[in-house]
Length: 377
Image (cartoon, rainbow, N blue to C red; front, top):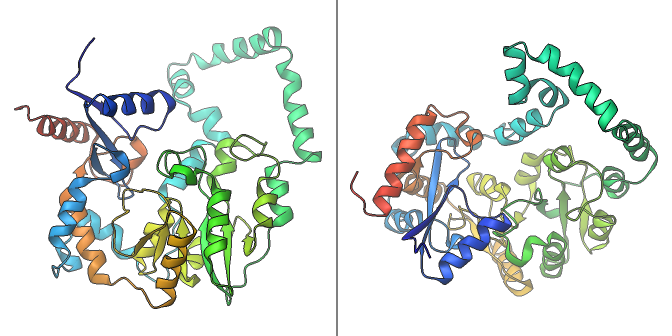
């Protein structure tokens, strides 16, 4: 009926409603565009066409620059400031995205820093709204009062994700040869749709286990945000027996959730992930990574692609044979990323740590859309 010239997504489509629209647009031959916040604050990439192909601009820029001899000093200031600390031996900073989510899901933030509550405190309406809210809960939702002690007792005495995980965790032996497999937060776009069939992380681990050299093990660690964001009750993504099933896979060892991720990356033979940021952190440290999915950095040097047991085995054999990535290759990739990326952020958290304002970001996104649609500004 409307016959659009293009469908523009603010982020990579991964909810049911926007993913259906995306697939319909592609089926009907309608141009699609999506923006993707990257791991460097205040920089986004434009995805056109198949989102699993990533940024065509980034791939073209890297193909042009891969033989160059760029130095760190050729990189833009923000990229250089992001990169240089991360290649140091002592770097151990908690990623800003994790810190923000821990803050956002904290009890204090939920009670006092939610936007509606903050506004209510500012305009002083909080002091008469709060008693009314409590009264409504007590009178209209009487049964909710019984919910909290029931949940507390259930978590105290009955099985939950945290208890199940702890039952199977073991301390790592860093003298063993191992690959590090950090679990993804789920549900999230890094596994659906970016992981394809490997949205099933148990399937991924079974594939790695079947491909692994006989004297290697797989160290698995839960993502620190999984329980904070979604709680420790069982769910579709973390069901009863989930960790037990993982622990039963040959060569898999589940590690305490507070095990240092950077030490695991540094001491591993490789990082293996569906499409997680640990692979990016790994190659910045010149450690190879094996990916099963399609992250925005999928074409970065040091990434080896796997889509089954045989390709995973070949990737690991390549690593055993001495496959490596050079500092020059990484710098050339970062320079290509600089050329291809847009000074913009979609989610406010992706702009944290950047000097870019929301207004500047919006203007840059608008200019990119107009340029892509070949509309004069």
